[in-house]
Length: 477
Image (cartoon, rainbow, N blue to C red; front, side):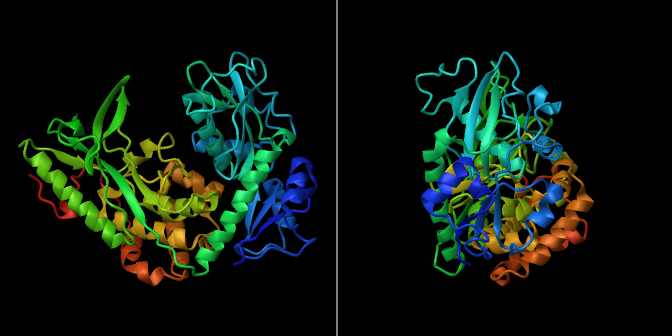
């Protein structure tokens, strides 16, 4: 795998992208040869119905980085599934026509912002339209609205299957952020920002290809799974009564009815190079947490999963010490999130799409946090499979993307996930597992992955109302 960055011939001839391609001397598909597996191509992909002919000739392992402007009904449908909110004029189709200028759908009485994004990275956030010069003095710092706009732009592009573009957003006075027009392409005024982002991505792509080709890299996986303490009356008992806010066995903050409290318990084990090490860390912290709650002498149930108690969405976030990429997120969605969803209790569906949207991530100093999975503490079998699948995805991202066809990118896969179609999810999980078995390194992870997929074949589903401690070898007091 060469890990080269190319640009599509047609894309290289359009506007700002032509200047970026010339400045960075990006090779053009067809003109300078053809990309190989592991390479990426910057392109404005054609609508879905025209793609087969347009993309003929590319190897299966080539990453087609879509920056097609506009929005079509399929895009809007995919974004709605992921919980993306729209300005009414966009939802009604008035701004969905491809090629519009991106401003026609803006509703009155809101502030409009443009956010250019290249590969998960917001390049700027600027106000447009009426009042465009009115911005807070700390706008270029960690302003809360700016952070929401950046997150909304990245989420909208990812949900629509795009890798870059300019997103028009409307911010209401109540803090709500909505997509206010079709996606736009790179603009001339942002040329230095785009060029620098593409340059950095090209270097990262080459580095990733070297790593997949066998260069030694210490890959670590960490986690911060959540669970609830529930009393005999069925009410949630605040975890802060027993666990410190910042402890390895600690509590997590949550805003309830405007008040900041810490009702959710969270385990924060040290990262490990393999699933066995992370499982040992989690078991050790569970024993510590059990001792801390036992001192109170109060009978409690420990519940995990997606939403074991209405209103309390739980996560089983995974941490990887590599930079995030859209391709890795899509492989994680396909190999981790969709198979886990096939084993979920029906109650977990209430968590989505507000929480647990596909591709949900947060950049960290060590790499990134993958936030889509529910709290797999509900099942040690699911936990170790999630760890192993995530490590396999990080080590063999390009190969898995090529082999699986990424069911998380398809409308059928996304709909099965957000609507909880267990039969479709099991079929996807079966196909994903078949692909995993063809990847180098699967043999090292088989003992953690295979038992979970065998349980799926038997039709097993976890129960979110059952105390998790017996499954982890802890006594229930």
